[in-house]
Image 1 (cartoon, rainbow, N blue to C red):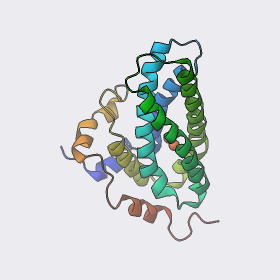
Image 2 (image 1 turned 45 degrees about the horizontal axis):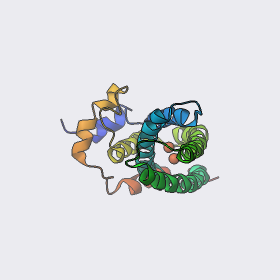
Image 3 (image 1 turned 135 degrees about the horizontal axis):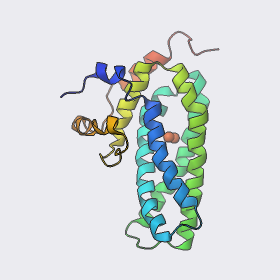
Image 4 (image 1 turned 30 degrees about the vertical axis):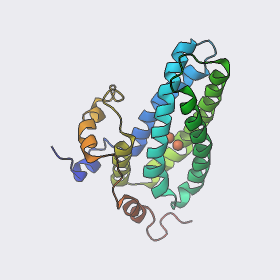
Length: 204
Ligand SMILES: [Fe+2]
Ligand SMILES: [Fe+2]
């Protein structure tokens, strides 16, 4: 069955805030392990690899499907600029650590601490998005846009069925989304911007 945009936007399954929160939930589970000084290093290494992969996918998808189209919304602009700066710091660390951890069979003390630092940086970023930006998005944006953004995020994020094992609603969509490819729709940003910046609606 082909996906139909009307259905995507009407059933609210793809609401971007809910989709981001579900991705954050996994990241926070990893952060908890990486911050725990008493956790076994073998487990930490396994979680660290999965965490780095998830952060880099989350980051790319979030920047393109959320930050880029919303940067002109007055109410969100400062949050997005701050978020972009934080992403810049975290993403660079993630890239560097991914390379260091590839093929590694044991996590040394220094890398263990470095992972903890990145986990804590990201924890702060997630908290700010969740406490400041997401409530504004729910308030400022209409349901159609929130769902279209979630749909674009899902295409870019390319979750596996296993990633979504606790979310049967979205798990069913994985195969269909795969067929659509991991690209954002060409006119998506313009369409969102048209919706969110009409005649001074968000101006003071
Ligand atoms: Fe973010
Ligand atoms: Fe996020």
